[in-house]
Length: 187
Image: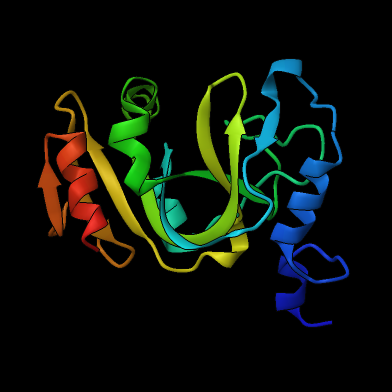
């Protein structure tokens, strides 16, 4: 077995999203009762522009998703189960950010140091407690990122590619989350 074969879960199809769909259809019991994940579509999304708000945007952009949650009762813990090693991660569809999630989404956006933006296929779900739709994707399958840094105390957003250095030239900057999402949709 090659190293790259170790980066994805093994199942009959070799498809991490098929394995996730099967798990969610099984009626699993979450570790924390209100951390339930509801399957919204039993077909994986095609590659879609996603955003994940995080305290480590530059690290994820340069190293990829090195941590994730395995399939199991901790899957719905959206702030991560602090697992080391590859697994599933959560993101939001960029097209839905400022329309569907305006109130709840500002919490995710403003409580983090920044975000990563990437294209990935995944499984469309709804986090029952958060009442918000999320895409669960296999972290190691993502390889190209933009990252966004939020300037402290300014609520300003600057967009960089994975090769940029903090403080280097930003591709785009704005004070508006809505303007940021509009710019990302054009990418």
